[in-house]
Image (cartoon, rainbow, N blue to C red; front, side, top):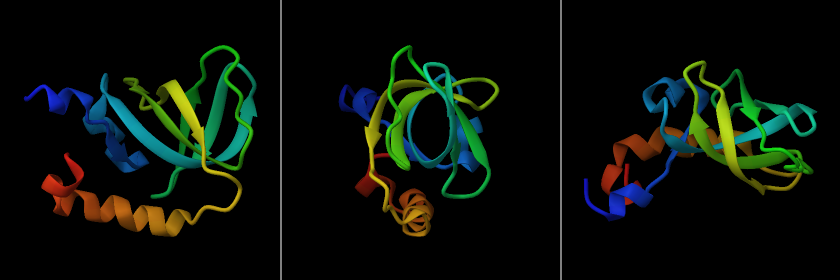
Length: 110
């Protein structure tokens, strides 16, 4: 692994989480419900739901978010940071991107 590889964070869907236990990932989803300051449940672009373990005080204030975090053994994600993707985001298009990424590893640095 080169030094630059240590900064690469894979974009994943729910179906890929088991490959990334104890590693950092980027995960985009639609907020289904939150327990403020504790957890958020997100609908995954490739189906199903993923639990996000929030840092204390992290606001979840939009319908779609990107979470950078560490995948836990139970396939939840411990949040390191959250980026709002607003209230109008095309999850089907994003799922299509997730399907393309593995086919072009050099382009997406996976």
